[in-house]
Image (cartoon, rainbow, N blue to C red; front, side, top):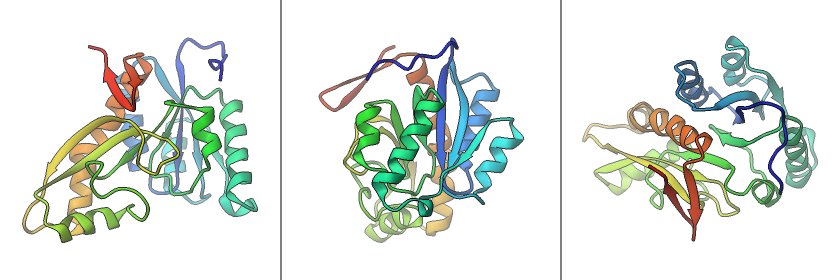
Length: 217
């Protein structure tokens, strides 16, 4: 696919959300501090009309769209609508920030290594089908691991299987519950490495070879 053509000097970042939008807020805060390089969040797309993430976007004068899954007969039709929206928004980078709706492989084929996701564990641990939200942290505590964390990776057709961009570890405490662990992983890892990964991408410092990400110094 050719490079997206738009007249702006900055890269257009499209953020996909479904819920509260805490990772979106981390990106907005980083942008307001001038920490996204030459990237700018130009549109937030939600799969739910009542997602609080939409309020966060509007509070920061970021345009929003709602594309509901139930408005489409199947995943293919929904993915086609999302793809059209990406084209209309001149997407340079697509960030899944708590986006809980499945898209088909046409999306990652159209935007290879231009779509990233944050996962609340150290991939390849506690990832893949069924590992989302609190389920991830419940599994980590049940297994008794001493360290967990978060991973930012490029999105491919394999769930949580794309090239890893950044990871950050978080120690597990003996009195942790899934809820306390979830909060700490967000605060100590997700909210830090997601803006970092976006900045590295916008600065042109990420290269993918043989399913590995190399970061230019």
